Image (cartoon, rainbow, N blue to C red; front, side, top):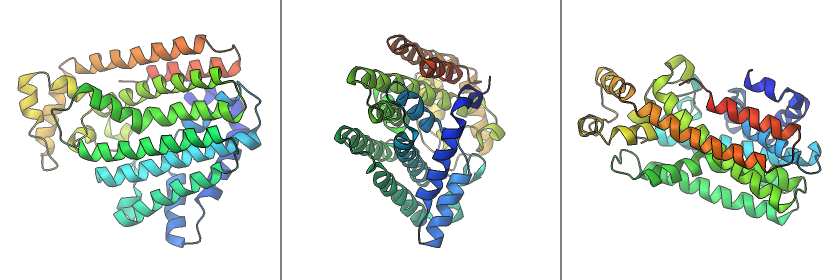
Length: 320
C-alpha cells in the first residue's frame, strides 16, 4: 500500500491544511512570495501534518483548531529545508532547483527566516502555554542542529553520539513534536502526549537513518540529486561512520572534498555498498522502529493508532 493511501481518510482535512499553508506563504514582497510558493509547489510528504492530525485523534479532534499546529510544524520544516540547502550549497531538492539556486543565499536565508516567523504567528491561534513552550524549545534545538551541521562538515573523527544528536535535531525532533503538539492541541492527557512524543522521536530517528542509507542505495532519479551527495558535501551519516571503522576505507573517505572527481567518488561508493555497513545501519533503524511500536502498544486502540503503526512499518520497509 502506498503511503498516502494509509491516511486517505484525512484527505479533506489535509486539503484544508494545504490551503492554510498557501495563505501562510503569502508575502507583500513579490520575490519572497514567489520563493515561498515555489517551495510549496515542490510538494513533499506532508508527513508532519499527518502526524499532527493522527495524534489529535487521541483527544478532542477539531480540524479548525489542530490545523494551526499542522501548518506551523510544516512551515518550520520548510524553513529548515531552505536553510539546509544553503548550508549544503545544494542545487536540487526533489529534482527541482532549490531557492538558493534560483535566487541566491541571501534570498534563501530571508525566505527561511520569514517562514519561521510566520509559523510562530500561526501558533498564536493556540492559547495553551504548554504548546508554545514545546514549540519554542523545538525551534531552538532545530537551529542548534543547523549550526552543528555546519560545524561537523568533513569531521570524519566524530562520535556516533554526535551523529545521533544531529539527526535528532535535524529530523526526529519535529516529528516528535508534531505528534506531541497534535495531542496537546486536542486536550489529550499528559501521559498520552508524552508517549506520542517518544513514538514520533523513534520513528523520526528511523526515518532519517533510512534516508541516510538511501543516499547510497537509491538512484539519482529517485533521490532528485546525485547519489552520495551527503558524503560529497561532508555530511557524515551512519553508513559512513561504520565505514570509517575500516582503516583502508577511512583513508579513502578522508580524502573526499567538493573537488573529488565523479570517478573517484563512484569507487568509494561501491566500496561502501559492498562493505556491509548498509545492513548494519538498517539494523539500527529497525531497532528504533521496534521502540516506536512498543510505545504504540501503550496507547488506546483506535484508527489513529493503527494508521500510525502502518506509517511506521512503511518507513521501515522503504527500499534500500
